[in-house]
Length: 272
Image 1 (cartoon, helix red, strand yellow):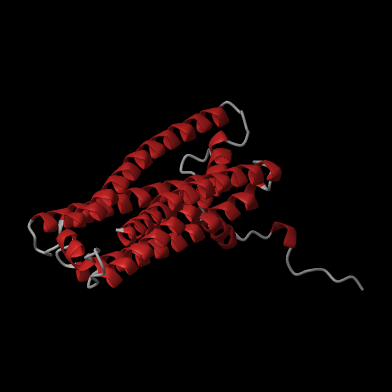
Image 2 (spheres, rainbow, N blue to C red):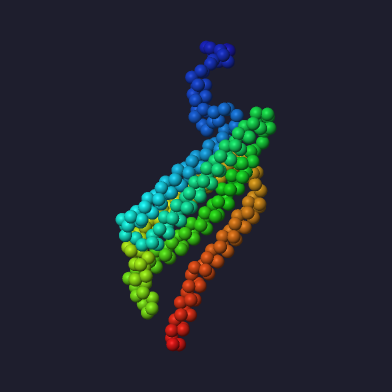
């Protein structure tokens, strides 16, 4: 016996499901002009978000630095002239980061427009800025690792020495007098430095996670074809060697030379 379906299934239409699929597709990262492929547009969208976040953060830090300098100038916190060093350095760095990110965003937008023009005339290839971004993410992570390490290393030594020596007077070294001449209120400076170190460590972890996420997203879409793995390893090794030499030189300059000077002074005083 032949069994036939009640309705002709080949002519059944399901407009509701089609509409849901269309809605889900549009919910993903999608170029409003329908020109750039979704995977590449997602990379561009995240990079734009990173740049705007960096500009906003730099502007906030710059504003805080200006406020701190103003408070020091009015002597509200009773901190000596050295209190200007940290907010001044932070302000200069944040201002530099703000300006460079603004130009970076401008060049990114121009590169995206050129890429759209190429797609419009059917030149379909991986945009050059994606490979540049991929390389930059790896190199920046190496540099930021070293910078964060050096900030925490020297900042931690500075904070511990300030906390330890603010009440110490030994031989010809009257640290309690010198520190109070520099910082009218050393206790406040210790807390400010400690908070700054914690903030730097926290921001480094957040940005490292975010940077790793973007690297994995690019790998997932483009595969490992943007930059040869051997070339990338060589670039990272060169950058590691550079920062390693900078750190060793800084240790020699900041720590070893003053220690040798103190030992020489002590030997001279004993001979007298």
